Length: 449
Image 1 (cartoon, rainbow, N blue to C red):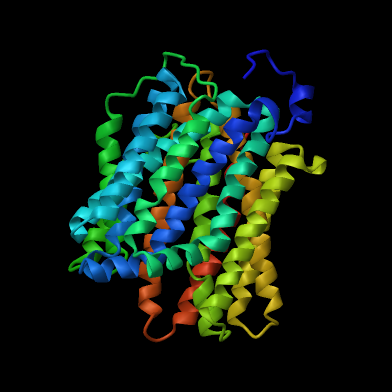
Image 2: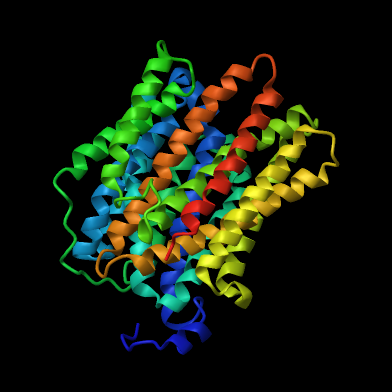
């Protein structure tokens, strides 16, 4: 790869899929694709895992554990990537993620399987931040929006084929091969990304108190996810304690003002956290509303989720390529507004309006988050101090995890109060609340510069 500088005009005319960028682009796409596939595949085969390992009581931990360990990874890897460059983090992340896959795939018991999932989560956290730093260093600013569109696109294909492939593998070879078959592909993706440009600033230093607070936040994320299931004794007390842990520890790990709308990078990070939580908070109840109130099958309801994933990519592509959306701040506001409006429109699924109306609403929500999410990633790298792209990327993904954990756990508690008598009403209330959260994102979205 040539080290000659690239002018802005040359960058805008360049293709990510040819010449000097091809290898890095394919590698980044492959890593993101495997993350997405593994995420969806685990959700598909977990019932088989729980039955085989007699671990139904620990079912929720299989999803909460990797989220918790990723919080610690986000905190550690950002400064490390700034100090040493992204290449060591990519190498370490691939190794750790691969070890986690092997442990989970070979696990003789549910506790060992959970250890593997926790190791996976740490590796995914390391790689998630490292890939952002790769984007910052491998592509000029004019190409970064398109690079994040590649990352978005890597989630669309698994949404279409991932569950079916995972189910087929589990039926033919057994659930273990959903984990054991991935390391070979991860190694191939690593080979492609390994030689991407990697420069070290030597200035990334983790603040002394970050790791203890990260452990507190990780424990809070784990416990808030478990308490939100309402299966544990004294779950209200546990939920309150876990929520306090996240709320107290979170701001200490993020740029000052992230949760209070301080201008610039804090509002960039805060807006993305709200937008992501709004989409996730509504998405959790999309299949339920469509099956309970509209009488759709699970397969038919799943196509609504697929439509949202597809328009997410379309929104990201428009943000990177459509000239009327060239102003980054404007397209975040448009995306946030479209997200809120689309979720509100989907809430009409609980009424008797034609089904096409809520379906169009969910597609609009997907386009809105696609437009805003990728743009906020670009703004994060653009506004990060020189040599601190890793720390900024860590904060961005850490905030996403913390806010979404709080919103999803809180939503599950609210829904549990309606589940027995009025599940459609409970789900609708939470979808409307998610639309409000999307609208709230417009506040920090007005303070991005």
